[in-house]
Image (cartoon, rainbow, N blue to C red):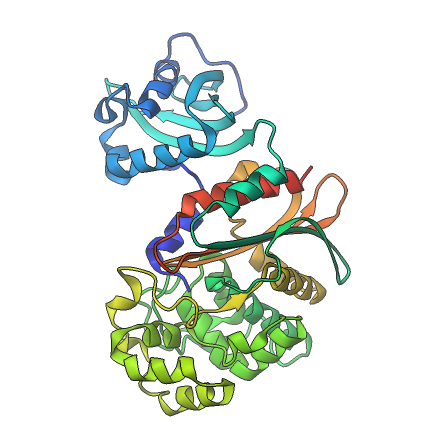
Amino acid sequence: MIRAPVLAAILLVLPLTTASAAAQAPEIQTTADSAFERRAAQLVDALNGAVAFADYFDPTFQSALPEAQFRAMTASLIAQYGKPIAVEKLVSTDGRSGSLSLRFEKGVGAVLLDVGADPDARVIGLRLTGFDMANDSFDTVAAEIAALPGSTGFLVAEVTGDAIRPLAAANPNQQFAVGSTFKLYILSELAAQVAAKKRRWSDVVPLSHLSFSSMGTANWPKDTPVTLQSLANWMISVSDNSATDTLIHLLGREAIEARMRAAGHSDPSRNIPFLTTVEAFALKGNNFESERAAFTAGDDKAQRQLLDANRDRLTLANVDGVSFAGVPRFIDSLEWFASPNDVARLMIDLRNRQSPTAMSVMAINPGVNPGATKDWSWLGYKGGSELGVISMSLLGQRKSDGKWLVVTASWNNPDAAVATETMVSLVTRLLALAAK
């Protein structure tokens, strides 16, 4: 399950960002004493707080990323990589926009910096597009993941045919709440039905079931006609919940459950009946306390009967805001669950569909910064989150040897929100190590 603000954080995938940097022309060395060079020289002090936020960043930047949020993100960076200590390798085409290397105590970040044309020439764009950790290792990342509050697990594995060969792992068989990662089961079943000639990607269907949604279908009228491929694109790339629930009802809840079992989920009952996003949102809220108690206490059959009996009540109109605020709510009982090994088997199942369209859907949003994709000839991603839950999963073909690998990690904390930026950084490092 993904709430819109959390989705934005996951799609951001950059520890520091604001307005998009200008497109870069062929590289030449920056001219001496340009506005770009002057601001680049102050970057370390700006990050360390020695230069005032308002003096360094343009009002447009300050509006997009307020100082408190900027300082929190900077603190997260420093906690992971140590203090920034030097700027190196400045390159610019026009003296205002360009790239540089930012050296931290534990590695080097690739940065895009843009300076405005106003007389103050303050910074209008700042993006950390990649990071190379010094002397990084699977053991180092594993220790940092294990130290996170709550429960964690991850798997980095080579997948050949149906075989999984772990390269690094922790708690790979433990069930975790994985949020919207469950939508990959829907994608696989859709691809299977297309392969069986039951449907076509170009089929036009109504957007029949509205939920709290992303920018994809937010505020769209019910029953707007859309293609199946558009629904799949939105469901995976921006985790659109209306697209998801429409597909669940169209494909059939039980058909998706069968796909999950066929894909090798180790404990399918955890996800049976296969909840729509609206059902999960509603049951987490205060409007359905008695139904929630009965649902969590019931077996698969009783749970299915409860959903059927309340079909007309478990709708978007009856979801209250408590589902999205405060502290984590029932993440051990009202969620979608999978172990890291289950996710690896799901990725294998998707690849076995041999559907170019399904693979293209997964590759729209790679989930990590552009610099982290350079060692992969293909990279597909799905993440998921809610309060207390974050999960990130990638399937990639390594450029150096053509081998396929899965990188997946989950972090659950029933007592507090989890830090998106921290997980993004850790998974990006796992992906970089897997590429070697």
